Image (cartoon, rainbow, N blue to C red; front, side):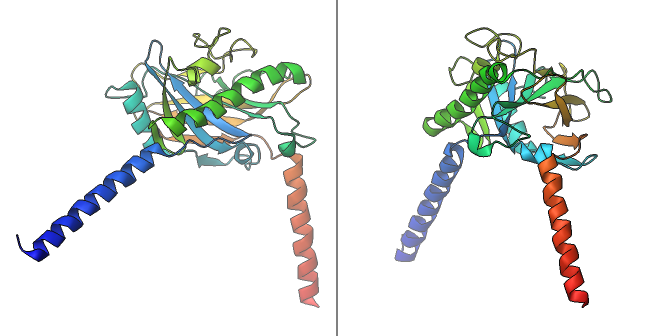
Length: 281
């Protein structure tokens, strides 16, 4: 082999090694979770794995313009994760899934959204019909569920830091039997893992919906999203998630933005009006 060939061979070997390390690093990147983030969880009855997806801050949903529809998450990552976790030709078939989130830090609290606020899903009867709303509860009652959701998110971060189980920084596969899994903290029973998702018997009902036994890209299912704050009466419906068999997830907002958001919009309008008056002089 000539010197140039040797150098070329070393270069190619180094490049291949670098790509391999990059791929490993991408798989091993830590899962992200922060206070007020919504978590999308998937599991299968008797299945060996669960999938957890961080959808980002709840603010994008409670501040969404009424009637707007937008994509949520990464459909390609979700589909890959489902394939690895559940297998099959249509890996999102026959699953239980829910969306949940909570506000636990006083630094994020407002008059409209106090600590222990929950965001919890509920299966809709069909694509065109809203489910009956969850009920508001006391701060103490909501706090028990909030603690389970927060623990689920924090443990997912810890799990990802020592296990190469990420599809990306927002999508994580955890074995069902693990104490860090979605099933452990969302499932019924005092130790989790039960057939319904009432967060270890701390929540008022089942937060999960179900995908069909055969769920292809042409099929869709709906989960309504409710914002539950301490008090009495019905929880606030923010809108609904629509998921298809290819992993595409969208959200349609049905409520008006929070009062604080309207106040900011009003202030912005006043500032623009004043600026316009000055420029016209």
